[in-house]
Length: 398
Ligand code: PGA
Image (tube, rainbow, N blue to C red):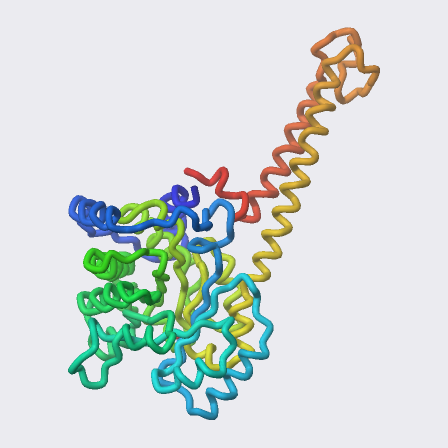
């Protein structure tokens, strides 16, 4: 249901974020048939939860936070970071993954709590062999790595990897059972030229296209939207800027893959996320988590980011309580209303009966009806004002 709301939401959000929305240049006739083909290869697990109308986030319904340690750390600093993470109190309902440099993976694996999974920061495009300096997905599997980050902007723009190469890597990693954090994102000049969506769609298409080869499942894919201009710059995208791209990505998945994949796939945001801005970003409906660089090197701050969905969940909980209150009040109001029609009920309640004619059977007073309608409207708008993921999608289906 939330997916149906995304196109409307994207139209609305594009109006106020200042992002020029150039019309997607994807050839839909082509991509439809490509993705219909993909769809037939995708095994979708119907047993998984994750309906966006019921849970806070898409995907498994769990918030997802990845820590990308990049080329940072020493044995000593990593020992400290791991110990901070081990002693941190982490929200149970969040998937947490860290990506140490290859050479420290073993150290981290041996010392870090099982609560946190381990990712690599890259993997080779296919099976291992004579590829000096590379690490294959098979080897990552062998040492117990569950995830790999692919398509990171530093690999794209510093190392020079292109869409095709990255798509191939993703297909191979998925075929080996690894989860893939598939990174996409535009450069500043692309954003300024109004090409944000085009760039993201193009990168998504490259990831998705290669899935044809590997018969993978989207269940193992987390999409990380990381605007290049926000990475390591301290210039975080505003919640509105991030949300509008996430909505567009989800909409793209819905149009080009399937509504189910669009609904389940977690779309996380990366780019200067820190302990101070994560809670605000986490409130956005289509932000299902974060990929964190610099701030993931500080254990306590990373824990704050991991727990940043908690505030929002508290709000959802209060929305749920309000919804229960609404359900509780509704029959009472209806009974009172019905009472006004009954001559056998000896209420002479002026709001509900017309005083001037107490024998009239259908005697609800206009004031009584008006009060009933106002109470219902207030309750309804109170619910929807939370922008509730729990309840809001019920009427945000436009
Ligand atoms: P940053 O990096 O949080 O340091 O901006 C994010 C990333 O590169 O994934």
